[in-house]
Image 1 (cartoon, rainbow, N blue to C red):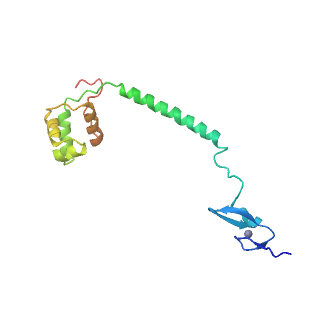
Image 2: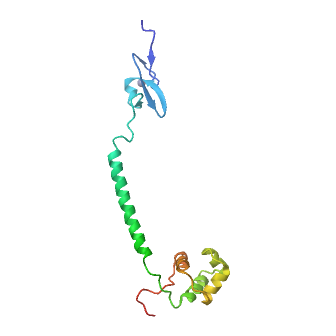
Image 3: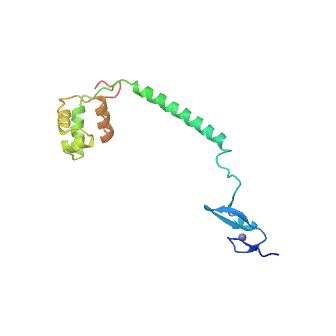
Length: 151
Ligand SMILES: [Zn+2]
């Protein structure tokens, strides 16, 4: 009485028994030889369980790094405002002209009004530290005097 034949859904061979395995998301009943191509169904798939140790280790490492970064930022925040170079307004204008930008275009690059750029170039206003840094970062220039420099 062998009317109940099993066919391996992977290789198509007639088998005495087949094993359900998960192959790329779908369950196939396959022979023992093909079973190794899929994951056993029914038994819990090992995900995350044993890797808890290393994960915790990595987390601690990341935490340590974050603390280090925070400390660095605190030190940075405590730095005194940098002194502007006496020629800073000329540097602004020269930078703009070197790049062939109008005052309007220059202002757009640093998100400031044209009138602000005009006042900067004429030295009518002293830019706040944030604006100085923005100009320096955007145009890769230095508007501040080097620490200890007397010129
Ligand atoms: Zn097979």
